[in-house]
Length: 201
Image 1 (cartoon, rainbow, N blue to C red):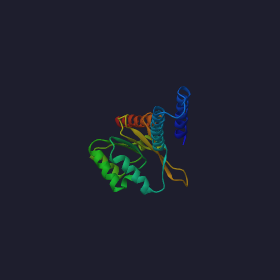
Image 2 (spheres, helix red, strand yellow; image 1 turned 180 degrees about the vertical axis):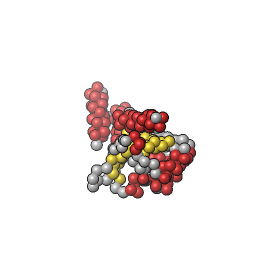
Image 3 (cartoon, rainbow, N blue to C red; image 1 turned 135 degrees about the horizontal axis):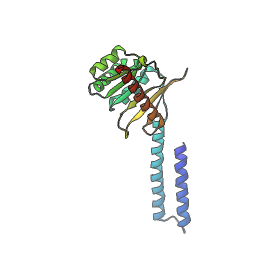
Image 4 (cartoon, helix red, strand yellow; image 1 turned 90 degrees about the vertical axis):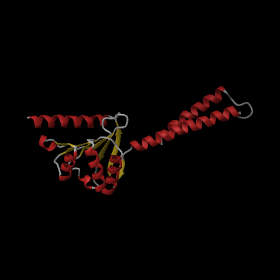
């Protein structure tokens, strides 16, 4: 609603300024009609674009495991390198999702941060996925997230999941310009460095 009001106010201001400078004498001229139509088209298009972008940024709510799995499948299937932070990644048991992850692992486009490796995580690691087991670090992050198109700031974003008691599971998508994206990438780098030091020690 806010984008519509903002663009309506801007369009009304511009139209008001135009008719102040070019007041109609007896009736609105063809040139003035053209200007009014142009205002409606340009500002209407801008308002629709803002509404679409705001809807994309808003948290999405999912009430079932099937809905969450569909979401994860859709963001993974057509994306580049993905970095996933998840305690046990139980959702990869979905056959469609696991098939996508197998392809990513083979192409070296998959990183997993997990508390403890599961059988399927090990299988992905054997196919080429980078797997960091952070449980040995004595560290258990609360946040669960997936960075999509990692390394490509023009199209990369982070999908962060959160759950409240008796409420639908929410997933929010934040682009590379958002502070939460930077914190997610910093967390991955920190865990990777700590893991490397532990293995070298």
